[in-house]
Length: 337
Image 1 (cartoon, one colour):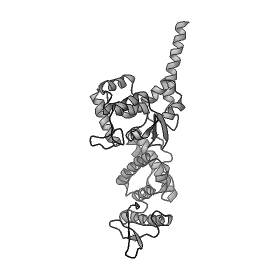
Image 2 (cartoon, helix red, strand yellow):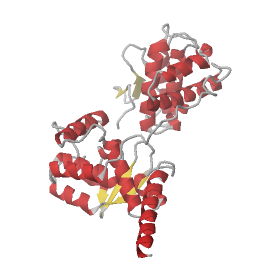
Image 3 (cartoon, helix red, strand yellow):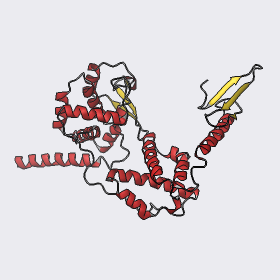
Image 4 (cartoon, helix red, strand yellow):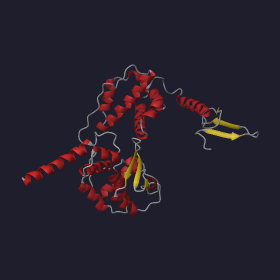
C-alpha cells in the first residue's frame, strides 16, 4: 500500500503495526489507525498542519501580508474554488506579492496603493492580479484580517483590441507549406488548429485519448470534459507521424512539453516558416473558432468544441461571419436585380 507523504510504517517483532509522520527537521508524530482511514487521515492532517506552522514560526508576523497569503494558500477557499491552471497562475502572483510586500500589515493596504500597483502592470496581467488580490482580500475579510476590501471599487483595466492575433488563412497555408505532414511542427500545428484547444491541453493529448474517432479532452483551465470528433486533416497528420509516447508531442529527450517550453519551440517553428511575431499558439484556437463560424456553426456548436464557458468570446466570431455572409447575399441580390 502506498502511504501518504511523510508517513513511515513498519511492523515490530510482535506483529504490531506502527505509523509515524516523519518530516526532516520536525519532531516525529505517531499516527493511530489504518493508513487512509478517516481516523488516520484526521491524525495525518493535524500532523502536517503542525509542520506547516513550524516552517514559518518566528519569521512571519501575524496579520502581515506574508502570513495572510500563507494562510490563504493553505485554505480550502484557494484549493476548492478554481481549476488547477488558475491555481498555478494565482499562486505565482501571490508568491511574487508576498516576496515584495510580505512585511506590510494586511489591514493597512490602501486601495490607492493597490490601484497604483495594478497600473504598473500590462493590461492582461493587471486583470489577473486584480482577480487574485480580490480573492485574497475576500479571504482576509472572512478571517478578520481586514475590515473592508480595498479592491472593492477598483475597476478592471479595459483591454483594447482583440487580444491574441487570429491566424489568417494565408498564415496557416504558409506554416503548412514549410512544415510538411509527418513532422513534429506540423503535428503540433494540426492539434492546435483542428481541436481548438489551449496550449495546456494540446501538450497533454495522446493516442490513448482517442477512441472510435473521438478525442476526449479534459480541459486543464476549466475542468470541462469534451468529446471532439477527430477532423480528417488531423487524422491524416496523426497517421503520418510516428509516436511511441503517452503524449503526441514530446521534447528531444522524449518528455512531455511544459507550457512555456512548448510556446518557445513553437516560436522557433514559426520563425523558420517566416511568420511574424503575432502568430502564436493561442491564435490557432481563435482561427479554429473563426473557421467554424464561417462554416455556419452556431455559437453553441462552437462552444461544444472549444469548451468556452460563455458566449462572450465567441460572439465576435459569429458576428463577423454572419456579417460577411449577409453582405455576400445582399450583393448577390443587387447584382441579380
